Length: 69
Image (tube, rainbow, N blue to C red; front, top):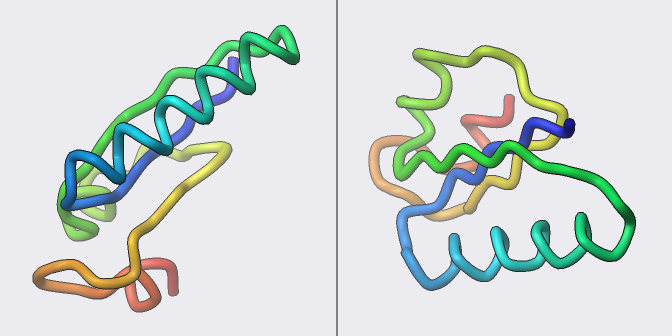
């Protein structure tokens, strides 16, 4: 199982990423455990370790580039 985090404050964008991961998993026989965060600070406070992190660039409190660092 691949653990993925989506850090995105816009619902439509988060759903698009989740749909892409789900479709990819179905095509390739992979399973994903997807967790969504609307704020990068929330991800960093409880970071359990992910295989993949999809992070929006422009978000409140902290931008995605700063969060990735």
